[in-house]
Amino acid sequence: MKTLLIPLILILFSCSGKQKESSSSPPDIWDSKSKDESKNSQSTKSEETKSSKTKKNNPYSIITEKEADINQDGKPDNIIVYSTEWNKEIKPTDFKIFRVVVKLSNDKNKFTTFTNSNIIQPYYPDNVASGFSDVKIKDNYFTIEQVNAGGGIIENSYTTFKYDKIKKGIYLHKYSTLTSEMSSGDEQEYKTELTTKDFGFISFENFNDRTIHSK
Image (cartoon, rainbow, N blue to C red; front, side):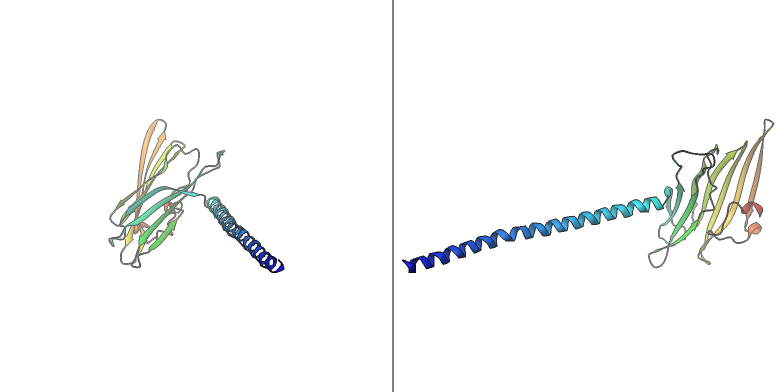
């Protein structure tokens, strides 16, 4: 009888050991999955936080984007106009500012970027005209058009730039304005046109609408 009991006891111990091993393995798999899921959720939250911070730090939004071959190399270039937004409560002293960005393709299949925030005049709440209106492109020339009005005066301004193939840069080509003034019921118009003979060579980045009038 003793000889029969010993094998039976050994069999029972071996079965219980196998059951313990099989029951202990599944929790490890689920633990690893839950750890991976928690890591993914944390990374997603951090990405969302980064994107929200980026939006807050960048007050500009695109209002106009045009594509053309400005440097005449057979590849598309871009002109992008950015603008800030109004505050929720607009005050008379508030204003929008604009930024013009030109991206020209180069030999390395990349873009050379030119930026200027002084081409388009700031837009105030009391401006009864549209402010910035359009970008016109023809060959290696492009013109920034804007209309500003107040106090009975309406000014249309046209700032034309040219891509210089020799200098491989963008330069002011022409600056012209058409001003209408209402005085005692009579409308008077004044035209001005400045060219390189008047202002010399002004690069795209160095142009300033506030100082060009003194040329």
